[in-house]
Length: 170
Length: 115
Length: 179
Image (tube, rainbow over all chains, first blue to last red; front, side, top):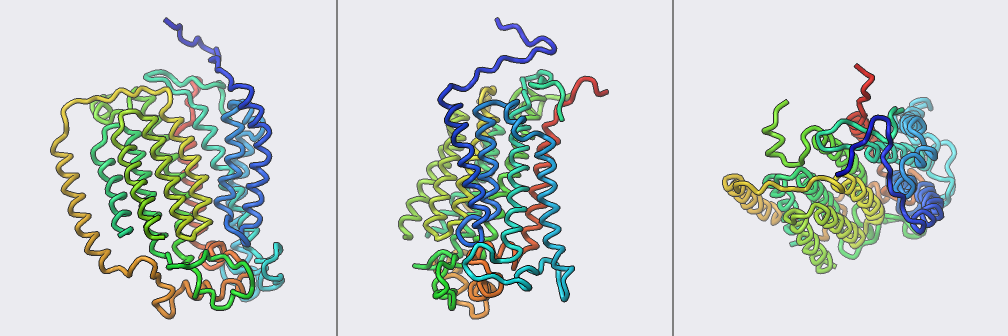
């Protein structure tokens, strides 16, 4: 018969094997780089802000699954995730409002493309489109990582009290 | 024909929501219905022997609408998929809270327990 | 092409039937993963690469979230009395809906004949023809999402924000010191 957790005692978690931890540490950076590629080239090849943001979130979630919650929070903490989430949304709104500022502007006018058009099929082209992709990717990746960390944190037991891994939260 | 198969998938999801007793199965059925709906939208925009709506060389940029598939439903479905993930996360959060409260995922028991 | 799509759809239907009526919760979640990946393959066959990329990675995250909810949990199913009235109502509803959908689909244009070719002044024709000169983006789907239809993307960002906010609030732990 196992005895239950006493107050203040952290449950012992079995760590993932050495292979999983080593490969996760090696691969996470490449997944992050691939996510940045999908976001930045979103206006030239398939991808864009949404898919790229989810790939970026996946790189952090891989670290969470392989190393556990304390290490993942050291990489990208609660406050950072919440700040980036709000920052991404506000940046997207600011880009949309920028269309109003320019002359003859409407909401969501692609003002940068109208004043400084680039060459077609180049990276620095499309005005507001790559910037909006970046804003959306920041927002989506931060929120998905935040919600997955919070899901992994809650230690529910059947008809029991909340016993988190850490006693305080944010 | 493929449209009818898509509707059958939607119906499988709906039957799952109506008849299952386990909360996780209900969430799984909702996810299946969402896949069927997104699939139906993209199928409507398909053009026989068309190409993807991405311009590869400027030569084909004129009259691109003759050879490309319809990009409009693809754009709508793209946002819908990501929103579906957010909604599914919310459902799982509710299910976890219910499990913490009642100790089971069975919806008939959740209805009967009081307090 | 149509045959391949039909075969994949049949595979998805079989996988979804397994997902709903299997006893083991973990098998059910894995079968839903199969449905999602089949859907991603169909998107690729229908010449929609953006949607296929997004569906694949979202499917992976869906599996992670669902497995978090099911592993280590109590999986006893109460096999009490069968709810015959509920099953009959569900079956009747399915038959009615399928009948209506067959009639409605017969009035749709055939598969492979979208609005772009038939209607002369469709919005999608303008987007495809004027996408690269007006916005400078070669990916017409990205141009639609951010330039032509930016408002919808703003709405999507709002919905995502609110749903994540709801999930994080729900899962917040109540510490014992707060009264």
